[in-house]
Image (cartoon, rainbow, N blue to C red; front, side, top):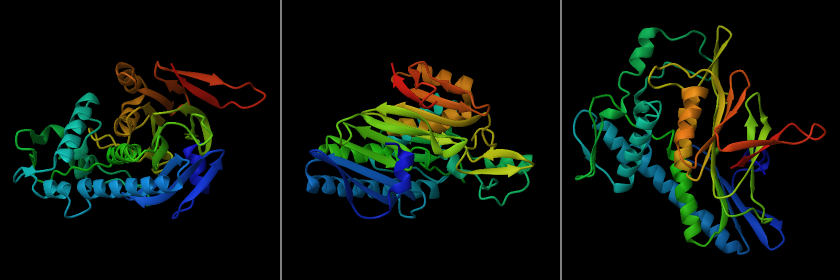
Length: 343
């Protein structure tokens, strides 16, 4: 069952179950971190399943209070408020998340950068923008973005933003980190099979309620409510970034909401990117990065990494994959939708 299909029939609030033989899938959908989380526990113990979901929700709320730049009392806000002034002592958990984020920035040539939070809002993707921003506005918007100016001191566990006006935020990695943590919490409580879906940042473990592998649908970027391909997985994360959710149309040209922090301009050449690996945090960070890097550089990057795969749709509707994926198409008489197998 795909995440897109689940989005069509799951309503907010409450628990419900899908019965199948001895095990049931207990699910809850709730708004957390400003987005839609869907948490599934597969178990023959209803109370254990519900308790695990409640514990996962509590963990996600804890993480939000730690990393949110919108909460004035969070450690992240304290770092931002002291940019160019002084280093801030933070919890080891936040320190390590920032450290990992900087490593991904270096890996992706700076197209992933948590200091992107300092960007001025020169782009609007709500349909109101009719003209392009000026070159001066673009240059000003990215002036404070530079992950190398996030100074870490491992001896003191401090974070210092070197320039005034710098800000960090975890919009491109936080949901994946939260999904990872929710999975760990549920596993520690005895849930051997489950799924956490943070509005498309999805991680699975074990089996579905029918003891089959998880079947995840990948949206067609031309028709987002239709499935382009099915991915059969277990113990994997799947994260997709696409240009079909938010965009601006100016002079009959479509500008995606995914902005390259090194240039200030929306990324072009790509319609969607899906990253498949065991870690939702890494998949979250790489999905947007590969979207910006494009087919040649993006897929080349994935091919250099171990145990990470990628499926891309270019602006010309070409389907491109990393070297560890094979596409198996059904016959002409059934459907053109492929299934994806990891080698």
